[in-house]
Amino acid sequence: MQKHLKVSAIKDGTVIDHIPTKALFKVIKILNLENCSQMVTFGNNLDSKAMGTKAIIKIANRYFADEELNKIALVAPHAKLNIIRNYEVIEKKVVEIPKEIKGIVRCFNPKCISNGEQVTTRFEILSVKPIAMKCYYCEKITNENEMMFF
Ligand code: CTP
Image (cartoon, rainbow, N blue to C red; front, side, top):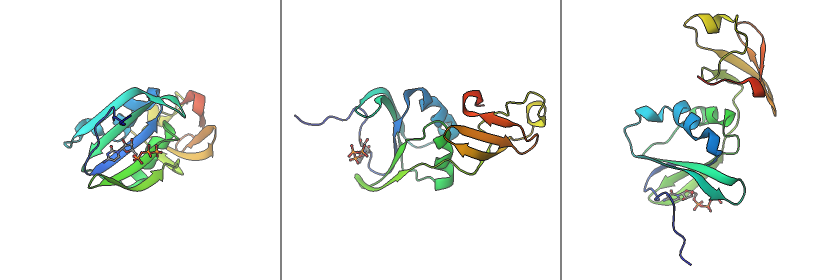
């Protein structure tokens, strides 16, 4: 039987595969794809042997810095990145949670300065599994189950 892609192949660009279905729109936001002028296609609730269901995003003609892509590890820790050139997958990469996170997540402490003023949140990652992050401003810890995204 011929393999039929649910989301069409791209000629050049980046394919982000194995995104948890609930994280799809967060990944779109984190990578600021709302403002991307290139062709962006995505699929959600697709069948996946490993995950049950998954989401996928394909961004034509865009290649991201590792630093940029690593930000999505907070919501899609098992995402697989495929770099496509002339229809071929020329590189596969995985994401890694960065040591420092700027923006994206709110500080759990309601009294933190970052919740009251126009200050970009900033955290040091203390633990990856489960995620625990220390606020640069108030030093309180935000845990994975308390993480709230902008
Ligand atoms: N892909 C694409 N356009 C291309 C080549 C690949 O959109 N020109 C997509 C495929 O649809 C797939 C991903 O990139 O979702 C990875 O491609 P490939 O390595 O060929 O697929 P798999 O072997 O299934 O990858 P993996 O085992 O890593 O899931």
